[in-house]
Amino acid sequence: MIAVTGGKGGIGKSVVASMLALVAARSGKRAGLLDCDLTSPTDHVILGLDDQFPTEEFGLEPPKVSGVSFMSVQYFLRDHAAPLRGQEVTDALVEILAVTNWGELDVLVVDMPPGLGDATLDAVQLLPRAEFLVVANGSAVVLETVRRMLRLLTELRSPLAGVIENMARGEPGAVAELARASGVAFLGSLPTDETLEAALGDPDRLVATPLGRALAGIGVV
Ligand SMILES: Nc1ncnc2c1ncn2[C@@H]1O[C@H](COP(=O)(O)OP(=O)(O)OP(=O)(O)O)[C@@H](O)[C@H]1O
Ligand SMILES: [Mg+2]
Image (tube, helix red, strand yellow):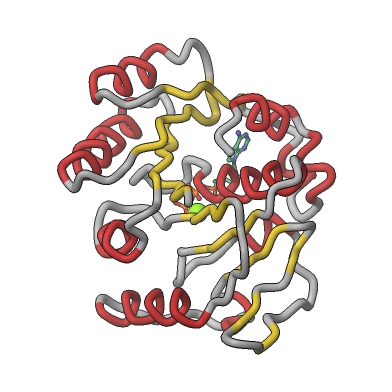
């Protein structure tokens, strides 16, 4: 179980999480993806969800989207907003985890929402087997939050899969150095990919983008 996190918003957690699940499925693994962003889910846009819906059999069985067993509150939200607060977010997550029947999986990728608050703490508590993959980049404002995230996860004794740099602009020096100083593996850098936007929603194109190939090369899953 790999929980893709990073603390900071908009650094590519959802893109990395969704593409990791696709890459794993393409390499023959039984892969699942859980969009843990209960108020602003986006993985369905990245994967390109049609009108699939979970089937009910011993719980909710997630449909397969391009080979990935995919669960998201989007099935139930559709175009509605999810005005959840505090405990309601936790309750919704507990319910999703309780009712989802994943079957046998080799890897479950969990896409975490931004922030170091409820959602992250819930994930640490409710997904004790999850290893956290921390997405970062070299911007000082991103590093400030990623540093705190790494400290939080270390203090909570959560397993850390490593740090990955996304939307790299140059040498990975600052991110690699933060990982080293935090005692966490630096897994590599992903390019800023101008072709990504046009490939969103099309899994075959996504895995063939420079970003998809770089992610497959890093070999997280
Ligand atoms: N390597 C990349 N190259 C180009 N664009 C990227 C890359 N990674 C992410 N993006 C784009 O950056 C934006 C933010 O990505 P994404 O939604 O995955 O971030 P996030 O960390 O999940 O955001 P949030 O904190 O809101 O959940 C999206 O428009 C996405 O397509
Ligand atoms: Mg996201």
